[in-house]
Amino acid sequence: MFFFVSLVGHSQKNIFEVARSGSVNEIKALMAINADTINAVEGSGYLPLTLACYNGNKEVALFLVNHVKDINGTSKMGTPLMAAVFKDDVAVVKALLTMKANPNLADGNGTTALHYAIMSRNEAVIKLLVDANADVAFKDKRGNSALDYGKMTQNQTIINLLEKNKI
Image (cartoon, rainbow, N blue to C red; front, side, top):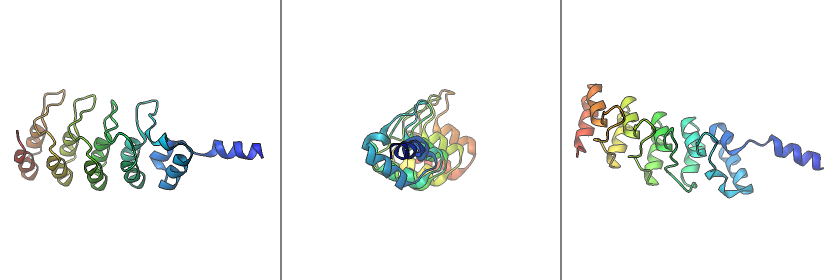
């Protein structure tokens, strides 16, 4: 009996593996063992929510958005919001902003979620971020603001969205 329990215990994925490619049911099973497991930090500094967002695991990301302690989950590689923006996931971006994710946090390069949205030219996400009071004037470590990047796209819709909220 002990051997069987031990074998089952070792075959179960950890929270970080589940965040990357698992299911909500797997998250719930891990939470039944330790409710705080969803707030654990991986060795590289990532939280499960950030990993779910970066890996496009929408179902798990949407579940975690409503259950984690720190919706911003900052690491040197960014926040869950940046990850969702990077993956062009409008639904997860909306959910994060609804839970008051801060659109003005920057990663190690001084890049914000709005910078990433502009780089991918995702007008829907840009609008969501601007409506959430993302700072269009914030400059990254290269000295460029979101508005500067917007102008570089030569996309008038993007420029208009950014200029609407210019400080």
